[in-house]
Image 1: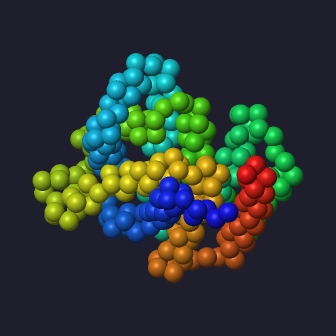
Image 2 (image 1 turned 60 degrees about the horizontal axis):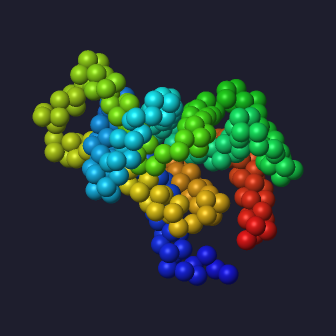
Length: 298
């Protein structure tokens, strides 16, 4: 049976492709803002995402869900913690892209699925089977190769995988609509973003009234770049099993790898290439094992 057997499934597949493709080409957008500091870009990302998400919640008639979440103190506290990890992930990604560390960002998002498996084992009581153990061992070997030959850990990659992995773990435990949850998280970041903008940002682009229209449009589009892939991802998740959606997740980091090496000419040292090779092998084993389980369940 083909994954394209029904109209709804086709829509789900195209939305999954759209979501991960947009995440994959996002570095090209952030490169357009390379003259602006990562902190300032993050401020705009938070502000314009909050506004856009608020409009989406209103348009989708989910405002009652938003109000219901705000009445649950434990859930709000949980979203505050997850917002901190999400903000850290956004900042590290923007910094990596605009400081010629896109290969490290790509590696981080390749590592992320396997890092999430390790978190599930540590915090959710999930047990690793043979293929998963081999995959995790290969990741460790890949990181160790870079540590030995380059003399440093891939900090940016591990930080991206770690912050997003922990964010996913926290959100997995919360029963909340994805858009409502992201809006609450964005609103948690909003006061800090505004204070940082007013008090600490001292750049030529800090005052939007003095900026060019092109620059201000790019600032506003940071909200679209944040929310548009999530719209597609949510539409895909409604129509496809999450295990199927998971097979599309390598599109993003694969595109980042190609963009970094062929468009931005980031150097790919042999040790770093060896690290990628071990991660790719680990993902191939992990994906093949997941596919076998999925076929068995089907």
